[in-house]
Image (cartoon, rainbow, N blue to C red):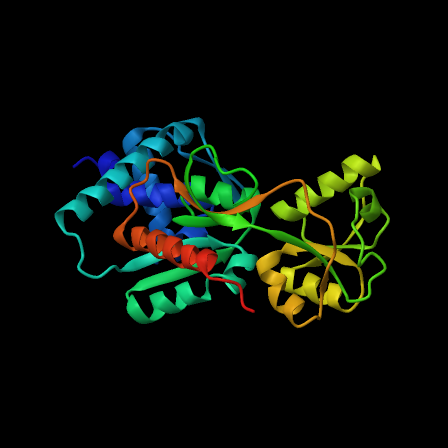
Length: 305
């Protein structure tokens, strides 16, 4: 086989192209960095074109590299499909890289991770916490096999998406907050002290846009980074926060937080996505199936009294 069609070289090229780093590609492929560099150079020599521009410590794809990348991915996906068709393993195995969200990882998915740990020990889950466009980009570039999303839109260019369930949101504050106990308008919130997770999270960005549209100018948030930190800040009386209901259900039940009488104009859905045209390996298909089953059971479960 010509080196240009050597799947090993194409796989190395695709990994470097996805990560834009020879060092990170070597780590993920468990190769020495010199091996990765040599394989990319071998492919470039056979094709007679440069695939990457070296810009000091950074690299980027050349035009030739951009043209080659989708074909390399199609060939690699087809090879994986051929292997799976010839030898479907009796027990799912292999590395599965999944983009996750704090709200789901901490509050909805622990039973799923426990299931895979005990029942499918040969599947190695690598969980990467990212949000929004970062997750979408990583899926399109093949850095993630699967990725969780929590967004208002349910269709994403270049990706196949399974909608898992709607995610209600709750506006919360410490018990006895001045805004508690009466219906609120969006205007009522504009002058309040607002707490939020980092920018780029869908529910924070949509909340900010709704408030800004009413206020006529950007509103200020005190950022606490994570859902858990924002929730604790609200419980101590530092302000009000809009968070996924699943993340504050325990605090509401314990009366550590109080729900305020306001509903956003937007709706979010938890989703699981992967790159369009990619045939999912058995471990990934199993992950999708078990995730859908688990969240369907959670949705159908009656609320605790």
